[in-house]
Length: 242
Image (cartoon, rainbow, N blue to C red; front, side, top):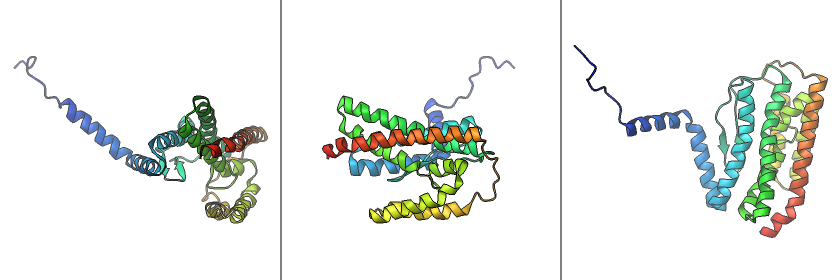
């Protein structure tokens, strides 16, 4: 029997699209839920234009981590947003050496911090107040991430270059938070002290060479100087907008 002219069964296009959408929602449910929750909370408190700008900058920061981890075969997961704290990207495969771990940590603040600086100055040029304030906060978040204490990005960088920095820096952050009555910084400092003593859960990584440590240190310090300079000089501008 010939089957050349017999119709073939095909799914309706709307059903196929529904199936694809369902698969995406199931696969990235944590990312989507955290994204929607964070965006909604930011929008309710600060307005949706600010929420869009801030979520975009947070996403760019996490994509810095994600793309580098993907390139190095670390199998990163989709970003997870934490309202009023930021976001993070987890990886399924830990790096085999500390240099890769440090560059993975530095990639987020580099991409996110530079993007925040560019958005800040564009906001000034185009006179977009919500972009100015969102970028200013984005610079601050990237600076906080560079503090040399775990579980912040700077902690994994310091662990590669000079692990002895972890405990005193976490302690100083807690003291500074206590003096300024910033209980969030106190909390971060205390967590950082415990994380410093926790170690790497038995994971052994190859130590970085002197050349790798030098290059990582220079990149780390230059990024801190850039972000700190812009953040401190921009404070007057942001204060005038309030």
